[in-house]
Image (cartoon, rainbow, N blue to C red; front, side, top):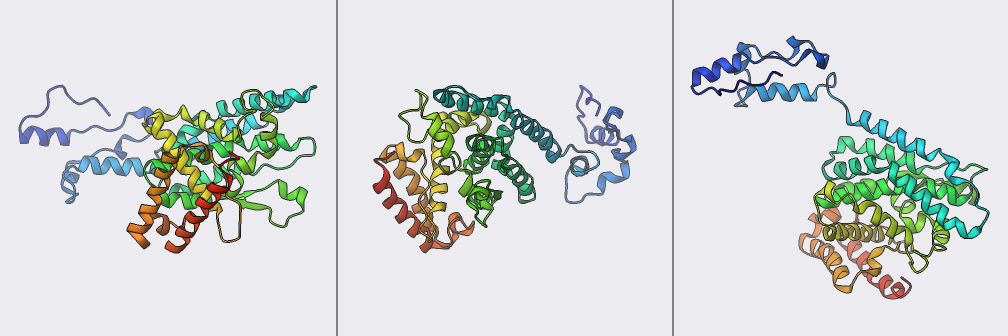
Length: 348
């Protein structure tokens, strides 16, 4: 559109003339100028709006013929990440077993660098995404997470190729928690992902939920054993959790939060993953960095959930979203969480 005149209209008559002389989008946008022209007769067509020009602009922005779709942009970025996953040069065999940890860390850094744009998009999308956009990010998680087994690739290489999916899983979850969008977490946790381990075990269940397969403790068993060979991680019980934390921490500005707030949201997300894993089938709790937090910080995380369940009852977002099946289910899982913490904290 042309720039508005320097002299703003002062009288009602001037304003009316200014509205009637509105010009159209520039031709380089690839649109016909008549598509956006506001005719004088249309100025009073919108009784619900004080500014019909804004209403017409909204129609333009929502028209599929003109807009750049988020899905198209995501596809381009996703292709770049997938291309990096196909670069097997970084999987060159090492002559010394002691170099495996260094090789894995190099691969992780390579993937993280190639995921930077997608991570930022995921964090922002997680904070505002509406239900009609869920399927786009579900597809991203499925495509990155559903790694297929190949005979010439070692197991730890397959695990490493799933690292980008875990990064996006965390980025979406943390973006959602920034604005307490618990409803989206239930959908995120339930995304179905192909499990390449099912092929070797002969299991009939070839798909697992994202909350089961993508948390680092479950997803990177072979990689963790290698990374611990590296001096920087030999004393860490949850090295991949630390790596994910450090990788995502550079995105504090994307969510407009401090490092302290980032740490709180990260731990809160891992607590919800752990609570989700404590179903009635006797599953073991998935550990997270909340194990190494102080008693005060961990109590703060849990008190938010306790307060919501006891005060809001059936209207608690943890119940209405389906994270907990009921108030009783939530209380039972919290009790199990405390029990697991007492039993395993010394390990971590």
